[in-house]
Structure formats: C-alpha cells, structure tokens
Length: 71
Image: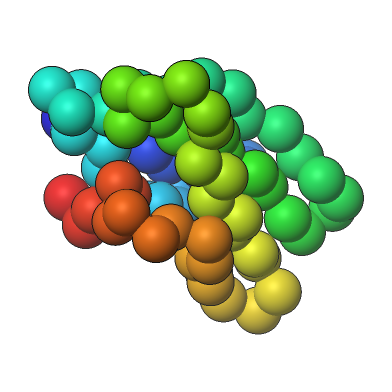
C-alpha cells in the first residue's frame, strides 16, 4: 500500500492509499490552485485519472475502478 498525503506547512491531508500489488502511480500534477490530478494504472496501457479538489474540503472524482482506497 502506498499512502498518499498532501502536506502544506504544518497541515497534512490524507488522500487515500493505492494498492501497489494491483495498481501504480504514473503521474501527479496540479491542474490549478485547488485541483490535483493523480494518474493511476491498473496494469493496462492507459492512465486512470483521479481528480482531487480542495475547495473547503476534499472531493475525489474520476475513479471508476476504485483504485484509491481509504487507508
């Protein structure tokens, strides 16, 4: 399991975990000041984008295969 956390100053935010036995993390990039995209892989040829929004809270979208789990 790979825990994903976002740290800003003294604040750490848990985003979830990726099971390294079945999936991987291909890329992480900021789309704007409040949106983070994480490209995961389930072993296939294409990336599965996960979009994490930080607009007063944390919202996760775009994970049809449930690759990002709670730790």
